[in-house]
Length: 251
Image 1 (tube, rainbow, N blue to C red):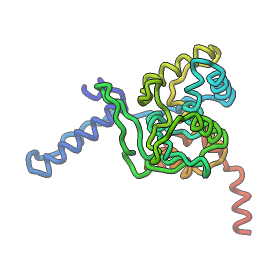
Image 2 (cartoon, rainbow, N blue to C red; image 1 turned 90 degrees about the vertical axis):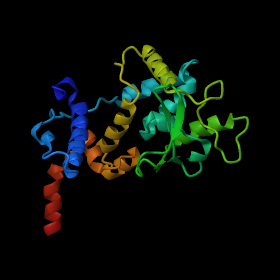
Image 3 (cartoon, rainbow, N blue to C red; image 1 turned 180 degrees about the horizontal axis):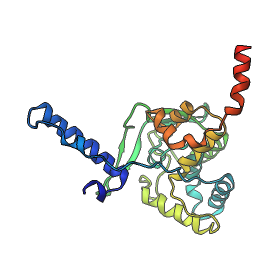
């Protein structure tokens, strides 16, 4: 009854937690057997993630850039589009995390909003999340322009790249409002949430033939299997080329 009241994904997580707790009780001789073995959680059917097409991405970015109200969010939307970074990772960027000469971003912290609405900064939860990724000339140019507008940056460059007009961290809800407003200016594009930019980035890279392990590293996934589970459908089918390769290998 508990599992049926939850979504399949939530039920799976609860199942793992309960199984672990009951097994601990068995190991401590508090119970004779782990009864969770007898209960099967609902099967999770993985849906293909929604994505934008290239035309939609181009229109969203250009509309944002031309809007007086939304232009300040353009660098954030651009980075999300061309790096696949999470929203919190982008909002946690400091100038010291961006090497404009080498064209790289170091992801060392992320902004998190607690249920109390308090803003905190956390280091990535996994080793894979703490990563270095390459950035496009478009991002380099955009961020160089933004940096040139800074009146002063401390010597350690701890200053956040993105701040509100009150010089405080940009809050996630501000991004959500701006993102929704952008779609009101593009009524012909169906609304999809901000995180879909990350899905789109991964899908387009795989469709272009980038090895899945490289895409997993760029996204900060600790397991390539997770990347494969989410985006395996986007990997091109090379079966028609395999016979040619086999012929070449074996002569």
